[in-house]
Length: 362
Image 1 (cartoon, one colour):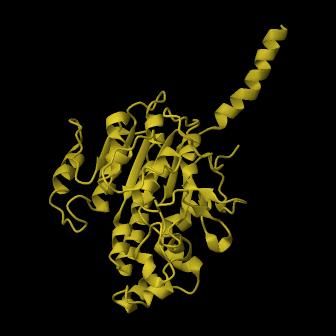
Image 2: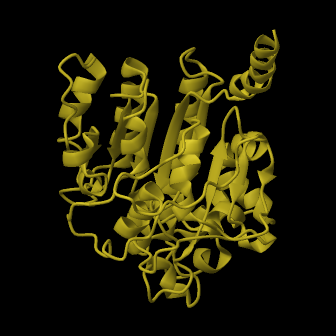
Image 3: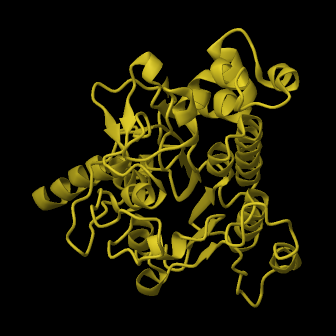
C-alpha cells in the first residue's frame, strides 16, 4: 500500500508538469543582417536624410512618424501588434536589454554557426563553402522520437547546406536555387521548382529571392506538416551592403508580412494551432557610427555584434520587451530552441552549448 501511495504521489507531481508543456512544433526565422535599431526604433532619421536614401519624401511618407514606437509599428506591424503582445522581445539597447554575438567575426557563417550549434567556433571564420564539423540543434532534434524526418530548412542564401552539414546531419536543406526533390510534391511546389529559375537574379546567380524562399516554406508546411521549419531570409543584408536604405526598409516590412502570413497559416491549421513556437532573430548586427558603417559588419565594425531576437508560443509568457539582468548571447539560442520543445541539446561532438534563455513559463 505504501508503495502504491508513493507511486501515486510521484505521478501527481510529474504529470501536471508534463501536461503543462504545450509546444509541439517550432518555426525558426532569420532576417540576415537586420539591425536592432530598426527593430526597436523604426526608420533611422539620419539614414533617411542621407545619400543612402533615394526618393526621400516618399520614403518619409511611408515610414516616418514622431516616436520610435510609432515608427517601428509601421515597419514591423506583425512584430509589434502580435509578438510584442503575445511573446517576448530581447535586444532593445535603448531600454537596457543587450543581446549580442559571442563570436568575434560578426558576419554570416560564424553567426549562423553560433545560433545553431550553441557556441562560437574560431574555425568558423569564413563565408566560404567549408563543411561545418559541429553538430547543430536542428540535427539533434531530427534524431528525437517523433521528429525523425520532420525537420527542414529553406534559405535564400546558398551556404546553409554547409552550415548545417547535410552530408552528416541528413537534414533536407533547400538553399539558393535548389529544387525540392519530393516526388509527391503538390502542384504548387512543383511550379515553384520551375518558377525560381525564371525569376530575375538580382541577388546574383546563387542567392534566390526571399519571396521564393517564403513560398516554398509555406507550401511545404501545408503539405508535409514538418515539426520544425527553419526559414532564412537574406535580402535585408543585400540591400544594406548596396547602401540602399529605401530597399532595406522595404525588404524588412515585406519579411514582417511574410511572417504574418505564415503565422496565420499556422493558426488556421489544426496540426499547428496553439501548439507551435516561433523564434525570429538575425545572424549579426551592423554599424551605426560613422553613418557609412551601417552598410557593413564584421570584426572591425563597431556595433555589428549587437543583435536581437523575438519568441512567441504556448509555453512562452507574454512579457513583451524583456530586460534581462545580464546580456543574452546568440550561443544560447540553440539550447533555447531545444528547450521550447522540451529537449536538452547535447552535442555528440562534445562541444559546449550555451545555456537556454528562460523564455519558457515554468
